[in-house]
Structures are given as C-alpha cells and as structure tokens.
Length: 119
Image (tube, rainbow, N blue to C red; front, side, top):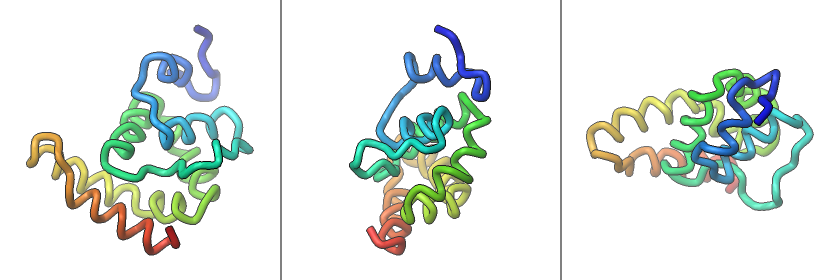
C-alpha cells in the first residue's frame, strides 16, 4: 500500500492499526484538513478510545500537529480534550500501569473535560 507522504505510516495504520472513530477522525484530518467526520461524536469518549488515539500518534507522530491544530479547532469538546491531552495521557499511563489495563480516573477526567466543554 502506498503511504501518505506527509504522514509516513498512516496508510499502514489504517490497514493494520487499532482504528476507532476518534483515531480515524485524527487520521482523516491528516489527509484532508476539511474532513468533517460522520456526524457522530468523533472525540474519545473513554480510555479505550483515548488509547487508540495514543497508539495512532505514536505510530504516526506527525499527526500530533494535526491534533493540536485542525482537530482541536473542529469541535469545542475536541479543543478541550486537546488542551489537556498531555494531562490525560500522563494520568492514563500511570493508571493503566497501576490497574493492569483499567483507567477509571482517566475516564472521570475525560468526562469532566467533555462536560465542561458543553457535551
């Protein structure tokens, strides 16, 4: 499969990565900044969604700029989550290690951020 020149590894991720709605939205914005999504909530709703986004950004690090810019501007909830992305990520990593795969405090933090952004 040919790869995306701007975001090496992106096409391979689409084929073989863990693709969820929110990670697909980030990836799609990397291909087309005007991408609007499918009309449903396209931001991460829980730690599993967040983890898929983390894995995408680790596999295709050039998409972090897309997250910080196009994705953050796409919806108030996305903007709120992106503004605190590193905080969510840090808590997720710590909690995931402590709880062998569970992240209830991360889930609570994400809910609070989304609620504060008008969800």
